[in-house]
Length: 115
Image 1: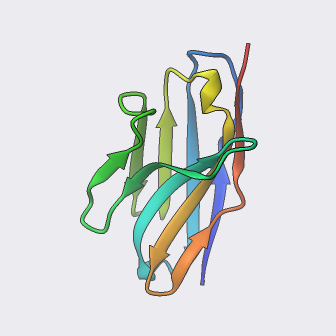
Image 2: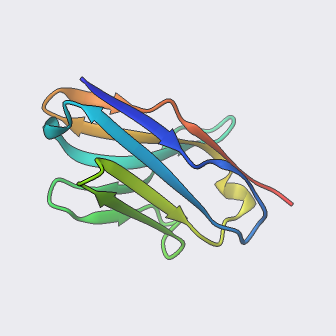
């Protein structure tokens, strides 16, 4: 099994920045894909950014140029740097992994962008 723990969410003003972290533990050797999703109230969960098994980085159009996903293999952690935040970025952000032991989700961290 894989355990994922997110941190770094909070309240930030429009135009501000936050960095989310997702620490993985357990059978981390099995992971070949890592991503961040988000879900706003009354909306479906959507992909924000991903690191594919080939190391390719992909982003939702709504966050391109503002968000950056990265991975620190030594710390078994994936990050989401979020800059120029907008009120529409308000959501619960979830870390997600896929691998030989299946799919796993973190518990989520709330990001609220408001003045």
